[in-house]
Length: 455
Image 1 (cartoon, rainbow, N blue to C red):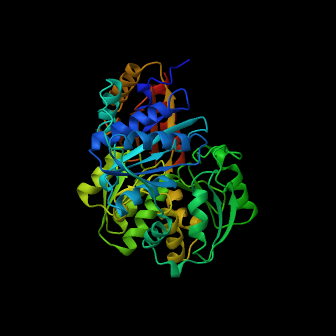
Image 2: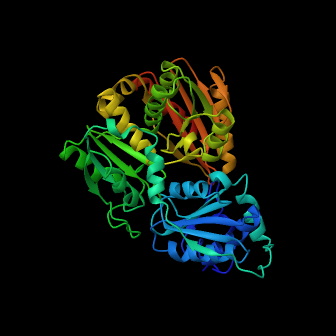
Image 3: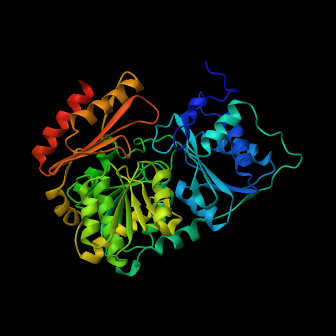
C-alpha cells in the first residue's frame, strides 16, 4: 500500500492535480501543495473553494493549513463550482486560487485546480512543474513564524450579476428546459440562474451529492446522459442541459434527443457573439469541425486555430484580444470573464440565441448537421509512448500529399475531409478527430485512419 505521507509525483497532470483518494491524492499532498502554491506565487492572499466530493472538505482544510503556514491569508468561499473560484479571485483582487475537485472523474478521485492572479491557469508547463519539483525535492520553505489569516466570504450573488451581463434577459422566451447536474456543482448555481428566467425547468440529479447516487458527472459518456435525454423526449422539452462535476463545462441535448457536439456549440456561441459584436476574433481548437471557421467567416469574424488545452486557449485569447474561445470537449472561454472558462454563460447565450432567432436548438443546428459530418473523438490505447510517436510519423508520411501541419499532433487537410491525431499528455493514447463533407466520406476515411493507428 502507498505511503500516504509521501506525495506521489504521478498526481501532477498537464492541467491540474488529480488521482485516487486517499492512495494518491490525500491530506498530506493537499497540505504540501497548499504550502508550495503559496510559496511559488509569493502569495499574500488566495481563494479556496471545493466541490461536493466527500473527501473535498478534508482536502480543502489541509490545503488551507499548508498555505497559511507560509504566512498566506486564505479566503474560503466554501463549496462552489470552479468558475466561481475564478470569479472570486478576480473580484477580490487575490494573488491566486485553488479549487478542490476531480471535475468529471468518478467519486473515488479528487484533485486540485490552481490559478494565479487574474485567474491565469497553472499547468504542467508553468507552475505545476515548479510546485511538483519543490515538493519532490522536499524543498518547501520552512513554516513562517506567523500563520496567515482565514476568513469566509460570500460570492454567489455577485457572480450571478456578472454572468447575466452577457445577455439581455428580457428577450429570453419561456422555453422548457431539462437540467442535469449529475449531483455536482451545477445543482448549486443552475436553479439560481433559472429562477431569474421565464423558462420552465425539470430536474435530473440536481441535488448536490458527492456520492453520485444517480450517475457519474461526466456527460460526455452516453450512459450518463440517458436520463436527461429521455426526459427531454418524454416532456417534449426544448433543450436539455447537463454539467460536469465541478460545472466548468456544460453540454446540450436538443429537442429531438440528439447530443450536441462541442464543435457545433462553439459555432453557435461564436454566432451569438458576432451578431452583437461584428468583426471580433474567435479562438477554436485544432480538432474542431470546419463549421466553426465557416460560421465565423459568414458573420464577418476572424477564426483563429489554437493548440488543445485551456492554458493554450487562454494564452492565445489574451494575445489576440479574442472575445470567445471554444474547445470540442465543452470548455468555453470568455474575454469578459477574465479569459476563463465558464459552464453557465454558454447556457444563457444559447437560450438568448434561440430567443433572438426564434428557432429551437434543433433548428439552429440543422444547417450544420446537414453539411458537416464529424467522427467525434476516438481514442486508441497503444503499448508505449514511443509507438504513439511512430504512428504519428506513419500518418504524416501516408498523407504527405495533403496539407500537413503539426500545431498539435498531426493535422492533415484535403478538399473533402480532414483529421487531427494527437497524443494524450499522460498515457500512450492517440486521439483521432475527423470530418468529411458527407457521412460516407467521414466513415470511410475514419476507418482508414483508424486502420493505420491500430494496425
